[in-house]
Image (cartoon, rainbow, N blue to C red; front, side, top):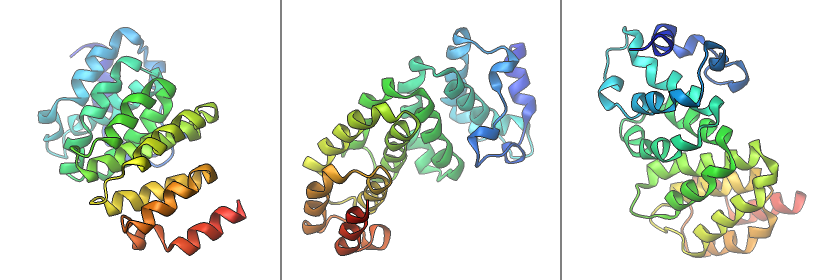
Length: 216
């Protein structure tokens, strides 16, 4: 383990490091990380054995510090690897990953739109793992407002051939579109409701949605 990775390893439990507020994450770049460290950081986040470390070992949290560092580096080369762990973390129901991976991809921004959007649209991926993709795609637009149109194009592509077996995913997708004030997609969202593809306990009734968009 090189010196910089050892520093991450010693940081320990991230719940003591403002896990819910990215602005309060440590500045990992102050430890000297550069683009040259991206391969080592990718190796950490894709190491499933590392995730299985007992919780009383600092190494349990190394993967989390690694993906935060990749986000702060805006590491384009890490996009595919970050997406590749969506399924693993959805299977183990890691709530921290569900919160943080979308934030990390949001930091990387525009270069991630194509791959994350394609993951969302691919029904061969589990609907649970696509919840991460949904949030990641929206976070790109929230972090970089100039990317909003490109992000909405990906949502439009999904809505043109939605996965009607993924009602919960569709409910959360609608929530993100409301946050993005995506009034230009309201007809496609209506169609999603009319096809019975929406978990109403997540997204609410169509009438409520339309009232929300009218107010925006």
